[in-house]
Length: 127
Image (cartoon, rainbow, N blue to C red; front, top):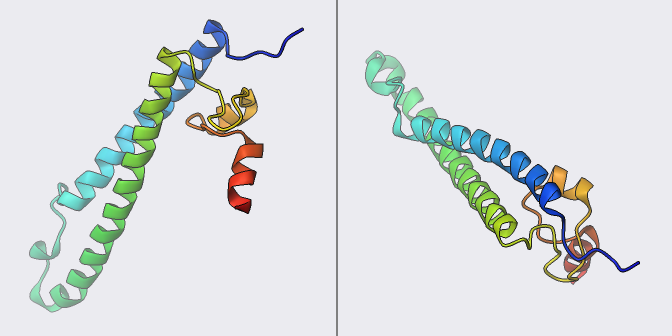
């Protein structure tokens, strides 16, 4: 019997459901981070007494910088998930971009946007 070269439509639908769920959660988290950066909740140094303002402004700036970094990382994750959805549409999802072999289902369930098998990933890190 020859080796499978792609996942079946039913298997792709299973992965689509996993990715859709992760995508919805990631978008919600991204919006929360954006709200923290934009100070949408209204809690800032402007609503505290002048005595605490100096200390809180530094903490507020650091907090916004952290939220900004997390938001960037979350946006990259969202883009990777969206790219995985496109690969599902093209029926190329789950194929390692280096070896051309199928990435194991267990890996795709854990990291649904993976484009490399474990072997290819390990090979990359040795270079």
